[in-house]
Length: 258
Ligand SMILES: NC(=O)c1ccc[n+]([C@@H]2O[C@H](COP(=O)([O-])OP(=O)(O)OC[C@H]3O[C@@H](n4cnc5c(N)ncnc54)[C@H](O)[C@@H]3O)[C@@H](O)[C@H]2O)c1
Image (cartoon, rainbow, N blue to C red):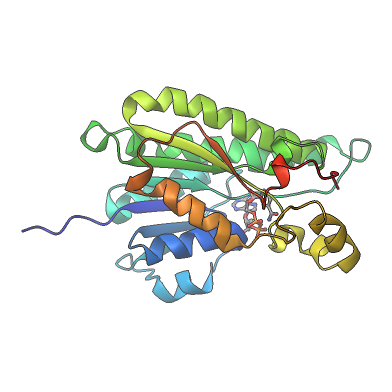
């Protein structure tokens, strides 16, 4: 009897926060994970399990999602590693706290280039692996959006980028459904990671934010990762084109925006 081959995932933004938690949980579930980030090394568990020679459960791949050629060559490396890609998670992202007046053309460009176009680049580069008649019905694409896509509390470039991610997710779900690829987005609420540590470490800001969350606290990266792992799993075979909020109920409450 032959052992079934492990599934292979690509996770961007895997050096920190939500991407790292997703990578850790996928690895724990037996998935082989390529951790892509402009910063390596990645999360502690992934580093422990990784084997840069390419025979372990994880591989660290330096990759800046702004770079077309860099993304293409990173995905080539992953393809050579296990000759398959089953799951793609786009978690790389930046938040620039810049209101309308202060947003320069460069800031606008940078945020869109990473959060929105970076997601598109990775999807396009992995497409030949996802669209495979032999494995149709088993491939999963997950994009990390933000509650900012639905509510006007964040900054213009970030909000536009995440609105784009959510809209693009619906488009990709429709285009790829005939190929048996499911495509979903997760909109985290306030999750304590490096992206917003400056705000969370200010107790006055944190208290104000937490008052707007029905569950009364910030989220943990692991709580977002658990939903991503479900969406990545064979169990999620009939879920596509959805955006799932993981936000302690904030998006559906009448609480005052921050
Ligand atoms: N933390 C939150 O409250 C929150 C809320 C909503 C959405 N999000 C989204 O979740 C995702 C993960 O963010 P996080 O909270 O874990 O923050 P984080 O800063 O901990 O992680 C972001 C990761 O993206 C990587 N990255 C940034 N630019 C990159 C580039 N050009 N190429 C490759 N990698 C790059 C960073 O190196 C980092 O490892 C982001 O898309 C973010 O917008 C976070």
